[in-house]
Amino acid sequence: MNRILKSILLARDLLLCLPALLLGIPLWLLPWKAAVRIGRFYGWCACLLWPAARRVAMINLRRAYGESMDYRKAGTWTRQIFGNLAQSIAEGIQFSRRFRNKDARWEELYRAEDPEIERKVLADPRPKIFVTGHLGSWELAAMMASHRASAGSAAVARRVDNPFLNSIVQLLRLDRHSQWIEKKGAVSECMRRLQSGHSVALLMDENGGWRGSYVNFFGRPASTRKTAALLSLATGAPIVMGAAIRDEADEGSLFKFKLAVVDPLQFPCEPESILKMTQQVITLYESWVRAAPLQWRWIHWRWKNRPDGSEETYTRRDLHACFSRRVKVTPRSGRFAELAVAASSSDQRSRRPGGAEMPGRDGN
Image 1 (cartoon, rainbow, N blue to C red):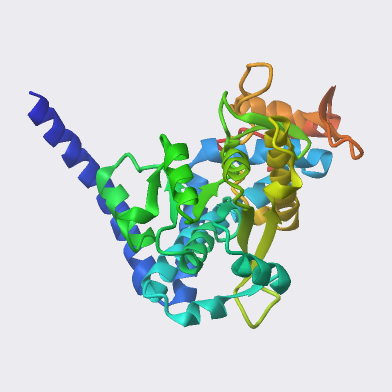
Image 2: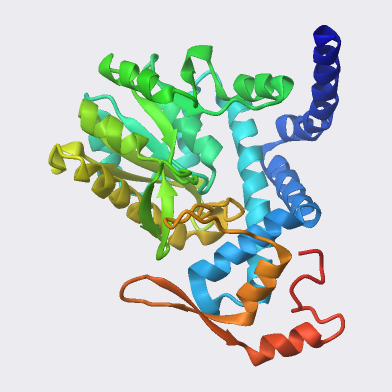
């Protein structure tokens, strides 16, 4: 019976994998610019077909930017955000096809925002903790970092539940299977690699759950994993933040590579340093997101867990309430507050039949 059930589940996973494979083939075969256009089109389609993610993005944008982010603007930004996310996948697939053999031409794709920081990072003999997030072309940034790293370096990643999709993802991302560290129980393996002189890479912009440290992100407490700070303070390895931001103004390269270094030598060896170090990393990352907001993954439940034990929700009612109240962001402290004062203009739009500004009428 178990064998039959396993066969059925494998058949189901295979059927689910086939559409993803068919959609990915053009992104692999077409020239770079054409693949990017197709990727953005996929993103716009996903925006139409995924109302739950649309709501998350629009609510997050409103709560981050306050009254300056009205319903129409949030909707426009959300469509562009979906396009950018899918474009990142297309760029990662293209990079994997063209530069898997570490052809030196991959360096022509980017320019370092601060060449002096890049020079210092490359000259530092210590192993590094490379942290990035879903900003800009994150797949491409991770692959670029992998090309720079030593042979024993690896990235922490979560296994895709579908085994067929997981194999495809690993084939695209990895030169060797040893470059993959399973997310569950990754701390001990990361520690071993760092102590052996090899670098590791981590994602840093996802919700850290109940066990995360709460740090300020866009003026609101966000649960954040403290793994990077723990590893850095325990091993002396510096945290190197990186992101490949699309830079359309630069005709010479497609991406501007941002770098920043958080050195554990600047912090005393005490428990409080974990939170301070994590906050410094997130503060720097927020400045990058603010500089290119359309290139970040606003559809993620980044503020899901709250310090009081409750959880944020993203229902249609939440969307309507969010845009029906005046939202105030205190500039000096960055603290977020919602004033429960109904905006009359929003109420009028919500009562207008077929109104373009009415939350919830378009499937949200």
